[in-house]
Amino acid sequence: MSQAPNVYDAEPIPAAARAEIDRLLATGDLFRYTAADASPVALLEAEFAEMMGAKFALAVASCSAALFLSLKTIGLPRGAKVLIPAFTFAAVPSAVVHADCTPVLVEVADNYRIDMADFEAKLDDDIGAILISHMRGHTSDMDAIMTLANARGIPVIEDAAHSLGTQWHGEKIGTIGKIGCFSFQSYKMLNAGEGGILITDDEDLIAQAIIMSGAYEHNWKKHPGVCTRFEAWQNKLPLYNTRLGNLSAAVIRPQLGELARRVTDGLANHDYVAEALNVSPWIDVPPALAPETRAPDSIQFNLVGMTDDDVHAFVEAAQAAGVKVQVFGMSTDNARAFWNWHFIGEQPDLPQTRAMLMRACDVRLPARLTRDELDYIHAALTGAAATAMSANRDVA
Ligand SMILES: *Cc1c(COP(=O)(O)O)cnc(C)c1O
Image 1 (cartoon, rainbow, N blue to C red):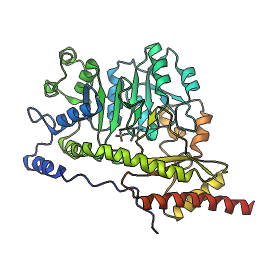
Image 2: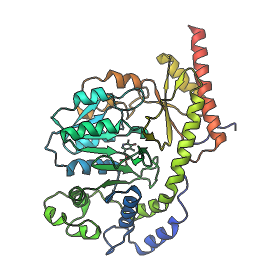
Image 3: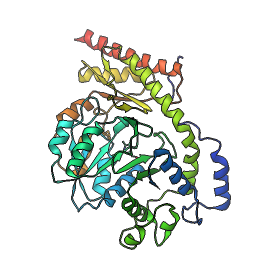
Image 4: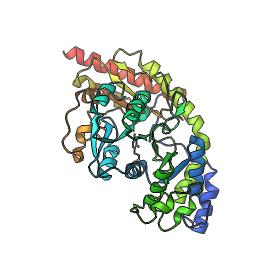
């Protein structure tokens, strides 16, 4: 293989989606609440809940909308503090702000997981909720988090946007907290362009989330299996109208059967490239925590023993070989660098997370890549590290 593979292309949507999409186009039946029952969105919710072993699911416009609705359903007062990791995508603190709450950032270690000492120090009785963002699918210590949260009676919401298929002690990520939220945006395991879904076992929370997502009047009757709590909330909640449409559901449903293969292949690809990268003295891929079985579609690694100039030289050398590397803390206006989240107001500095972001690299590694393509990518990366280090050492 002499050319870099394209890591941005998605997999084709299974052909089985076509007949359903044609039917929807022919009938114009695109709104989830037009049909009396069994709309594609309702079927997706039932199938997703069953796959995850959750009682209830609600499909919405994005994972961000799912996070926002989750925060609204737990009844936090205006301005309530929500603990989130400092390493996540800007959409996560944005969902907190959108829900009229205040994010409190927790330090993240150089293995991309929440620093539990800082978490415990910041978990006081002022904290109204904990939003665990499993950034890039890396799972923090959920045993310790749930023990601390339960001891104080603080609800935990999981941002599992990038963790579909990940397990913790064999339990599915997204089912450990009170609510789990997932994304169907194109760079996630299931691709509908846009979309999201939340799951919970709590009847009161799902009833509120369904109404607030836009089940106006008695459209909640089209959510089978969710029973006693709708009447109690009727006309008491705002309608944020952040529903999913039938076309998106028709694109997602045939992909559910592909998930197991994508998870297996994604993990095998990741571990194969990780092993090859770890041979380089300049590259470190942190291991998963012991209870964690990952479902990656990208790889993160730290550059070690490099100055800022070396890091820039590495990124350039990799780019010249056709492999795009993003160093989270170094690219201009990166949405995953907490210091760019000016909209959350003043925050204390987070030196540990800052140092990690200045050396942590991100490379997409979709499950569909072949061994040859993976070999090209890891050789380009280790070669770029060697080039950067020999070039910059000569000058020095
Ligand atoms: C993609 C992503 C989101 C946002 O998902 P949307 O569906 O685009 O709103 C939130 N958190 C994490 C960790 C993500 O990877």
